[in-house]
Amino acid sequence: MNQLYDVFRASVDPIFIVFILLIIAFVAVVQSAKKKSGALVLLLAIVLLYGFSIEPVSNYLSWNLEKDYIQAKPIPEKTLLDVVVVLGGGVYDIRALGETFPCRETTVRVVHGVQMFEAHKAKEFVCSGKGNRQVTEAAVMARMAEGLGVPKEKIRLDEKSEDTYQHAVELDKMFSDKNIRIGLVTSAYHMKRSEVEFRKYFKNVTPLLAGYLYSSPVGTPALRYIPQSVRLFDNTLILREFIGRLWYSMKQ
Image 1 (cartoon, rainbow, N blue to C red):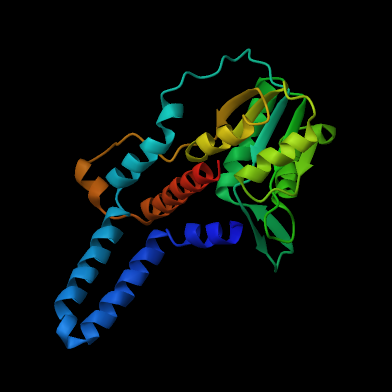
Image 2: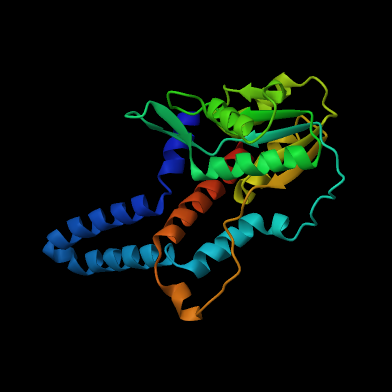
């Protein structure tokens, strides 16, 4: 079932969708009797590529994922936490250097997690994520957290979990006390699904948002309608999260 989910999740990549449509269009155009239908498919591919690449579409979709947290009141500064849990956002290898590095999203999450660890006087800092590189996500995150000032003896690693569901399951195994105050760190677009899973096992879960995809429009309005690769990337994350939420709701 998990392999089927991975295939399905990958298939909603905008570039993949457009690529498939372009192939269909090419085959249809080659067949002279179907030139009209081929042109229509090509037009659809162009429209989708354009739509997935502009700011208004990206902002509309990201707002629908993140609005509950954008509109929520910030947690009081004096709120105390027992554990800060940071969910991995990916790592990558550079073999020539023999090193594994955190992706941008992971870096943002760890930095925010360390800030929250210090601000809310947490007792433990959990790095969660297995990954598929030579070093686990959790180990890379722990190294970074220690470098940012978290005492090594307060860092715990979950190096087994590979998805949001497993993050929660492994933390459940790690802590027998289900009343501990958990600060959950992940990106805003991913928080809703993460919070739902963690609340299955723990009573006190506080969302600690590490960055948003949504951004308030600024500058010349016309520029928002010029295709940008960063918006295409954002929409890929957004579509995958929508699929993730749908998949998890079907598993309930």
